[in-house]
Amino acid sequence: MIRLLEKNVAGKIAAGEVIERPISVVKELVENSIDAGSSDVVVEIKKGGTEYIRVTDDGMGIAEEEAELAFMRHATSKIEKAEDLDALTSLGFRGEALASIAAVSRTELITKTRDQKTGIKLSIEGSQVTYKEKVGCPDGTSIIVGDLFFNTPARRKFLKSQAAEAASIIEFVTRMALAYPDIKFRMINNDAILFATRGNGSRLDAIITVSGRKESSKLLEVYGESQGMKLTGFISGPGESRANRKEQIFFVNGRNVDSKVIEKGINKAYKERLFEGRYPICYLFIEVEPDTLDVNIHPNKREIRFDDNERVTEFIEETLKNALLSQDSIPEIAAGKIYEPAKSVIPEYKKEEKYSEQIDVKNILSTMRENENISHDSNIFVIETPSTYESNKIIEKETIKEPAPVIHKVLDFNELQVIGVLFETYILASLDDEFYLVDQHAAHERVFYEKLAVRMERRDTFSQEIMIPITFDCSWEGTDWIEPLLDFGYVIEPFGPGIYAARAIPDFFDQSGAETFLKDYVAALDDDIDFESRELKDMLATRACKSAVKGGDILSGPEISALMEDLSKCRNPYSCPHGRPTFIKMSRYEIEKRFKRV
Ligand code: ADP
Ligand code: MG
Image: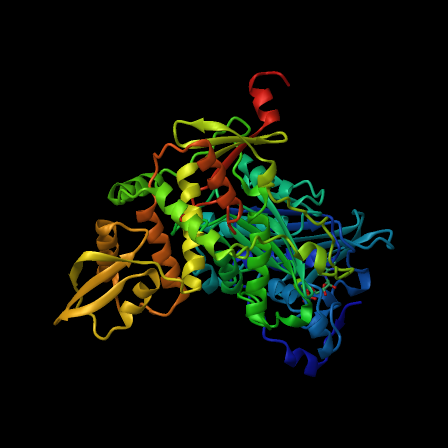
């Protein structure tokens, strides 16, 4: 039932946005359609929405006697008391959208509830009802907003081009279609149907329909639940990324939001898995308890406030990592498209490789292995397993539809059959109905990196004395900058004003490698560096690994087994620390398809 909010309740609600642009109208109307329980929503616009906006739904409709009330300020059927705000499950609640829209346009409402035989048609012009009659119409509501801002010409001036206005509307409807895969959304622009989702409940289908790209089907499904939070969605594996965040789309309790808190969780999960400056594709749908979220902020702001940011970031990170650690995240050669790393990235990598030092990888690895054997520590590597699925109890909520949990399988390295080596670079292997190629160099880097990280963590340094100290200049004040180098095994002493000498270097570098690393480090010092930060250490470890590992070694059978064994113990076995994949795979089915056997 639509009623007017009492003054004190209305006063507690942050003031709504005045209708500024056509998108504001579409947003309010579509949200109303969703709140009305619709399963079919059509959005039609003409001339960027300035001339014509129509939103038609098959929802619950508005009863004849309430139709006029719906257009009054603070008239809503969604809340009654101030306490209702904390348990909000609807998108609207302010009860002022229709009033604001009607005040600045010629609006027409056609609506019918299931119980009523005939519907009602209402015309409103700048808040005045000008026409009302019974009409025959299907169940649901259709609202047409024509001549937007006809009576407020000043606002027309602030509009962007029709194309730009249309673009923001289309983007919004796209996002709603993603958020509500069980609702059929049709988007019509200037008489052309742009997309029509199937409304079959499949998010992936919705993503494919609106993004119009086939690769979407290769996205990795994520699923996680923890402490009343739930995350579902689709993300890209190590083989695919974007140059910007455009394909990072988030929904919290059905609302499309921007959130640094969520982005942070993504960044953490993909750390060491993507090249710097590349962004994963992430369609994330998050459900949290409504009372842990502040929605009563400016309605046009897409930022939201969580009670506990850290908890949310951590949850996102863990859930994404689980998916990224699974076998499914290995890039697949399929559907006639061969995996191709982004062009801008690979030449860059090669370029740096040229400077890398000629170090014997096999040697490093075997020395490291020996050291490990001496220490007899089986806890050097902890393999993360997807534990969230089993241990956390499912929080049943009626308002939240329950997609089936995705169970990710972790690749069983013990079962992997190594077949041989291709081009002296790629290890060939198979398991069940999958065929794998492992990039030896990327694998070495990953193994080296993780071993280095473990040793650094334990401050188990690994210096080698050198005959002739490396001397270098450093104008940096104090000695803070030396600290991170000590962790790697450098021993550094002052040698004169602004001059220093390294008497010992890490055991995994040769002298020139150690020198290049040192000088690069000194050259990169700047005021913003926090010498104690984890980020700096990680960055240095990544760089060390670039200089220490080189490709092109011909590995013997036992060496391959040892490398695979080492890789299996890695926390992130599927990509090198710079973000290249270590594995790619092809299914038996795909192979048979290409030979036209199936
Ligand atoms: P709010 O959504 O904040 O309640 P609105 O001004 O958007 O306020 O809508 C006022 C009321 O009109 C709603 O509370 C709802 O009862 C009714 N209404 C609006 N649009 C629809 C619709 N598409 N289907 C059914 N009822 C609707
Ligand atoms: Mg509303």
